Length: 170
Image 1 (tube, rainbow, N blue to C red):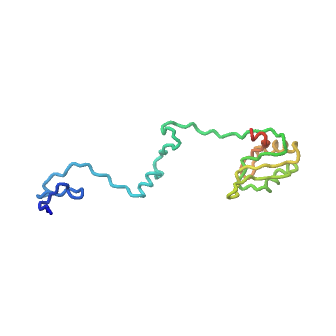
Image 2 (image 1 turned 180 degrees about the vertical axis):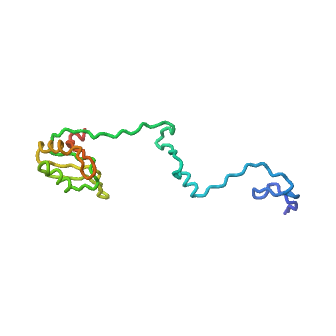
């Protein structure tokens, strides 16, 4: 086997260059650009999600161009459905409202047959709307006239006729 007696090797040894003999202080420092310090995991996470100090928004992920401004969203007005049956739709309902609360509210207008708050199956939390079945169509029309845009549990109700099953299929 050959041994290398001089301090030099042809490969430089493990990717590092070895110093030449002589006084290292007398040489001029090399003008190599300084490497940026490596970021730690936490720095990378903060850089990815933003630290909340800068007001820039990240680029949209839906494929839209980041500089293109999106028009502001217009709040949707609920569709007004004519009352043709005693079944009513009650929207913009407080999540704290119960069926008994609705029953009591609509009982002041006419005879209520049923009140049903629509909720999620997995956690039983209200979806924010309900259906109320009145006794007659006239009572349903009166309930829409009196209770639409009325404040109930901190929110303005949207009361209109419920869509029939034939209308929902089309």
